[in-house]
Image (cartoon, rainbow, N blue to C red):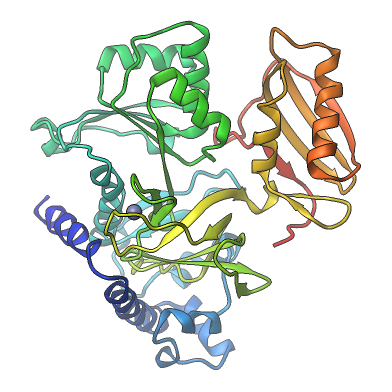
Length: 426
Ligand SMILES: [Zn+2]
């Protein structure tokens, strides 16, 4: 706990440093991680050797582009002793699993001090928005993330939390809320959206969190509006991954997400090169606290936009704009133009008669759209939908509509509204 308090104090101090100091801190941490990975981890030693590189060649963030990016599949395919540091006592490592929303889950291992540092990275956005340590939190989360047992400080009333699975029903989430009456509602954005819809449909007026934090799924426009109507609160979106802790979070004062630059380096790439501010690129991360199993230039599979509009928060942490979804959530139009998943969130909410929806693309000129009809659904809904998609995208496409009773999440419980099976354009 004392160690964690030290981390917390350091983290809260660092965010006030000027951007140039933060960049220097990143470079220093990067050099240390690169030296360690080269000396202690065969997987990275081979990667360096294949490019004729020595650790001295990677001195600052800009030098990272000399190394190739790596994928989850590459780490999964390598034997554990190849991707882990020599001489590490595995029984002393903390194991963290990815959610498995894109293929098989990956088990990551962290030294206790690194795990503690990454846990603290999730607290920064909470403090930034005014959360106090004695507020209680209800988490609607994947079963592998649910809290088990109480830490000693939770017996003293600090960072108390209870959890309920995303696979439970909205009715059960409401019961859990009423039992616990927390100040903070925290969970997968897709589940919070379902809960908000349930609260509005059932006319419940006693679910009144002080804060709503969304993680994991895309906090789309519809999700934001539903949560605002149901709870009279703005959802605060947090972006993170088991591979890198909390990566970025919505600032209460800036237009954008602050990147936790003291724990993670984020690159935005297209065709292997950094994209300019304002353009979408593949999110590639280097976890600066991953000494047991280094994560260097790791492809997360998400598409994000660097940049943002600085207001008056005074923090030196760099900004990024929204995460637009995963690479395979972009629709490729017949002309080769890309359609962001955000396009559908904007378009669908303007069409009456649709409760839930999901878009699939398996061919370049055809979309399949699943629809859960709302009470005011009629044959006009489908005509309207075809017209809107065609008009707003500016291109002719075949649109196949199928009416369904519900749209299940994937095996990890995440809800992905747009999925393309074509080769990723990024
Ligand atoms: Zn800010």
